[in-house]
Length: 155
Image (tube, rainbow, N blue to C red; front, side, top):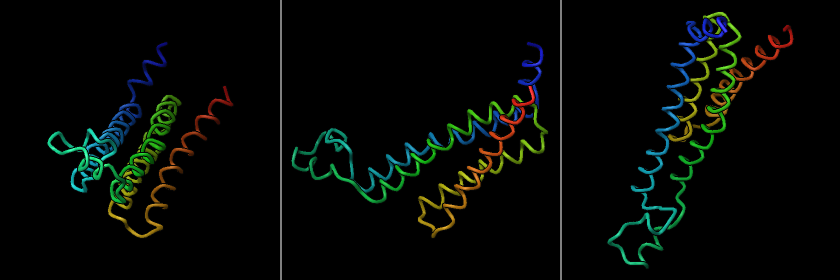
């Protein structure tokens, strides 16, 4: 029990907590960004979202898909698919007692890659920018998973 308390009190765990919070907040901010694009493009998912003052015919015209809204939604979906595994694997990784500098490298690569990925996705930067950013983040997550599995094998 004392070992777990020591691990949670470590610099690695503090670093993980900080970087995990940053990417979770980034992921959460994608919802307001989607709402902004829906409002500015007048592209809503449901008739009731189109506004109270509009008649039913106008509301039906506003229930449509928009390429910009869909792009932001796909970016948000990609965040969900990558940030949740990072948080789970990163937590387990932090509990294996890795070197602080190695852990910081993993965490920073992942966080940086998610911000670059979002910028590349929303601003429509040419490939392979988005793909490389995704691969860097995925590589960091898989590297941490490898450390967890190899540490567990020696127990």
